[in-house]
Amino acid sequence: MAVDPVSGGMLPCGTDPQELAEHLAAGEPTDHERACPHCRAAAAETAPLLAARDRLAGERVTAPPRLLDDVMAAVRADPRSRRAYRLPGEEAGTTRVRRRVAAALLRTAAERVPGVRHVRVRDLREEADGMAVEVAAALDAGAPIPETARALREAVRRAGREGLGWEVAVVDIEVADVRGGPAG
Image (tube, rainbow, N blue to C red):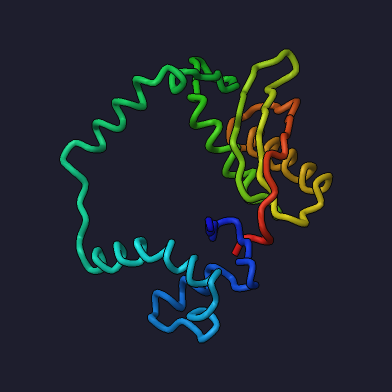
């Protein structure tokens, strides 16, 4: 049985997986959690994570030497990270922003919209009347899709305008997933 605490879903018995994990971490499962087959299965799945956490508690973990340099070299070598867009401006010279930076700024703004769980910027295109942005979004179950989509479009347009100086003419949204309830 897979337990996905990120989804906010309940176990078939009605137990919240997050509460179960907290009880297990404290070493204080309830009588129900000790007897219920669903809770016991979920506990068995989380046991390796809790054991690893306990082994690492209080230890200082350090990254290997040059890890940051190696990661950044890999990012710079990725051809997708080289795509850059011109930023508008009146002054002499040109300012460009890389695609991943622009996408991160737009994604961060979009994920602040109530009812939006996760956003991935799939495409950025320069068009005659401004930028076109295509996103895939995971929404909270119960979030009204038309209203959430309107707020998400406005957040992306505002972030493009205020953060990048872009006129965002089009924001295409694909609702790719609906998850649990409100994020907590």
